[in-house]
Image (cartoon, rainbow over all chains, first blue to last red; front, side, top):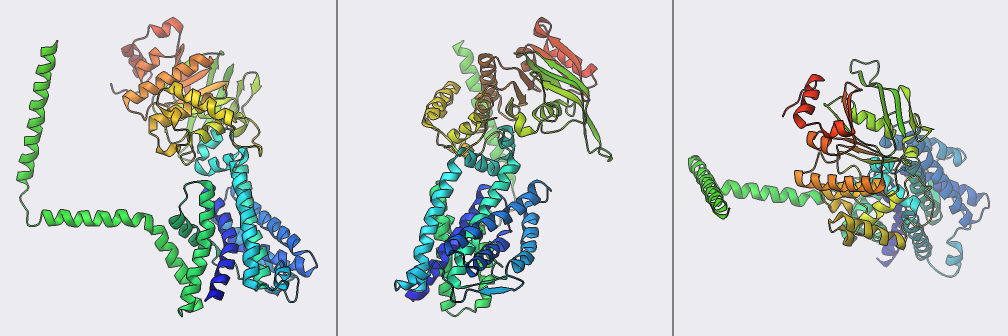
Length: 335
Length: 257
């Protein structure tokens, strides 16, 4: 059980970085960016090939981050320069990245990291398990990313980025180039996703061209779970919340798998979770409305004659009129 | 100061829905002019203001602001010279950002946005000061999200944002039309004070004939994309609401009074 938990936390932390990227596109820029499904693989593939080529594992993560940023830039270009809707721009990038990712991997659909030194190696040599090693590395990565992101979003540039997502009209009127902001924002978001891919490949020891499928829904599930449980009062709190959300999501997944759910049913489970989480904020209002309607029907059960209602309201109107009149008389008296 | 010369703007050109919104529209504003623009729906008032702001690029014509040709200058570049308040109070502010964050964004209008901190402590004190002049009790709510404020409060803050960095031209596009009469009067009062204090060159669109006569030193009436009547100074001050309505009617504009 402890093993499962450690694995879930490690994976959750890495996916927390993906979620921080999705936080930038979905929450800050208010743009549904689906390129994530491709850019996470791009990050992983670039990192894998760099490591196999003999690069330092840290450099490999840097390369993965840059590759992710480039992928985001393409989506940004399609959206801001070619005026393709955001959703479609992301899908186009994601589709194109499938081919590009296989090219990065030398034409193979997957690449294993056999007996390569990764970021985990020094820690494993110290006697840590793989899961514990990735937790340490991912915690450091998450802290660095959150610190950087918080700084970035509170700079003059970052404020302009937030304003762009919040109100593009106002931003343009205040001299903000909203196209540049969207482009940079998407590049930044996907850079984080690429970074996460670079860590993920070192943890799981291989990259597969299919590993990005469902990333957007997993990320969204994490984002929403985090916000619902931990709140989004301030920027910092919101960012920590989505990372915690990613961990909670992984723990839930680990538990349901442990309980015997088929791994192939995972996507269905995730989709339903996201649907419920998205509905939750509206659920209370709807249930409230239904209960009010039921109560109303109960109170007027068997009533078919509404004349009483009419006379009651006309009586009220007369009351108001007399009250008005007396007020007028009073004010006349004052003069 | 601002010169519009034979400005033409067409929407949906070449389709059955083609609208010639501005037709050889010409207007000249001296520095410090406060021009009130009236006209029926579809007369081109908003198109004119949006063209000056750079939201629409004209088909032809020329726009010169302070000896600078701005005809095809992109909207976000032009924002350096242009302060705007929209009709919709939701349009001028970022709802999920705080009052001070919105003001800090406006403070940097037309400036390079770098990686320095988005707001300085000294600015906060300044914001508090100018907010207190609004007399809406907003000076103690600097870190309140704008989305929690009323339309009137948001419009007042948008006015501050438009004038925080002195604009060469202030564009008010029916900025009190969505407010209740009392709030509208208050926002208008704030507008006039800011315009007078800053000696701001202003274009204000309104549908309120009494306001059109009371405020500003010039009045222009638009119809079908052109300025068809103009009154200045004493001539404007002597106008009465019925006279103005007559002008409207003789201009072929339907009025409900």
